[in-house]
Image (cartoon, rainbow, N blue to C red; front, side):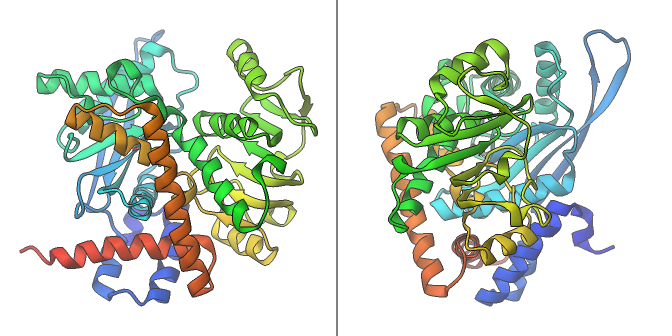
Length: 420
Ligand code: GLU
């Protein structure tokens, strides 16, 4: 078995294949090239978990993977999903390294995950899983070591429990141990909306390049979690028509545009976008609706070789991590669809996390307006740089973004030299 097989999962294989293509292209130093395929640390933990209504105890598996420790602490979210595995978490940690480097944050990439479906869990059950998982991570996390944040299936409350558990073990309040916390614990409201609003800011920058206007666009959003809902709200506020959205409960469509603030009220009562009276329920595949901007903001691997040809969007902005497979990427490119990759498009989340962490560690507070402006500035500058790399090298935006991220991480590793 090769070293790489240890982290085998489809997502890991895809991330490495893509990495191989890009590192061939830039002719990366061969030692560094192999080194960066493997994470520096990968912790697997197992712990007992009891559901509210049962006496039996189940064993749950969790992970925390830290890819590169050369540039500063590691940073990345924690996801709860039944299909979480070591390979997927490793792939996502690697993507976090490139993402942070692309927007210029002083972090290496990390990711964590617990292999459990969070949807049927009661609040108490989720709290027990979170606290025990955090306790198992104590040896590897820390305000200046590795800082978790939210991802699929985790939210502000989850981050608050992590902060509380960690602080109890350390013996003093440690708000900087996680980002994406509730405002009452030093979290920033900018972080809550940052990924979705960042996606829209980047889409807007891309439309500019094509001489198109966001306010004249039609938008389709797959997934209405933290990323999808704020991308929808920002699109609506800019005057664009959000014509279709979906979530686990169903999909809705209105060719004249959905009133997003009204939809928020509907969701607060009904838990799903389905049956909203300002749109029709929609049974077909929303990814295939004709539109200007398609934002996949749900899970990975949804645009693949068997549906990529049916996509009729002009621009795809990846709100989720890895929503497009490599083979679909090529089909979309051949079909002239402009794709803005996850490592650039959804970098608003980790950027706002960085601001929150800086505020926590320095006990310094910026105004929300200032944070928002900084966020947009970081994202649009990164987009501009990636766009220039793409034009100069005549490559697509994913390749250009990877060139930027990989070169930066490789330079940091080479400059630090070898120990011992
Ligand atoms: N889950 C976020 C991402 O994939 C990052 C979480 C964080 O803010 O650390 O970019």
